[in-house]
Length: 77
Image (cartoon, rainbow, N blue to C red; front, side, top):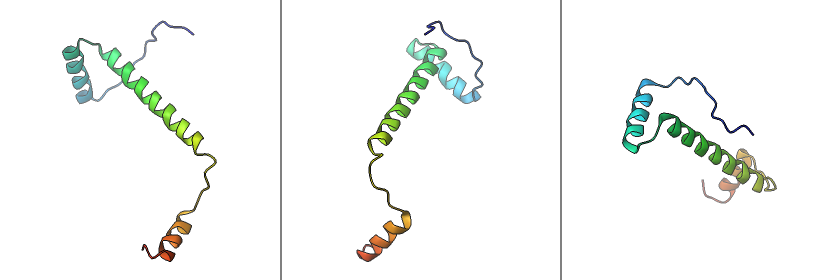
């Protein structure tokens, strides 16, 4: 896999850009580094979500209507 950084144009909301610029200066980081870290965390979260879905694929499903009917039959609504 190519490990050289890729260049991209990203359009940021001006307030988001200002916040990133200030955070980068305060933490001795770069805006690119902050965006890369945020993207990594987002992708890791997606990976965790997909793993959770895969773990639950065998669980039985129940429709909303069926669940409501069961709640009513149990006297909970």
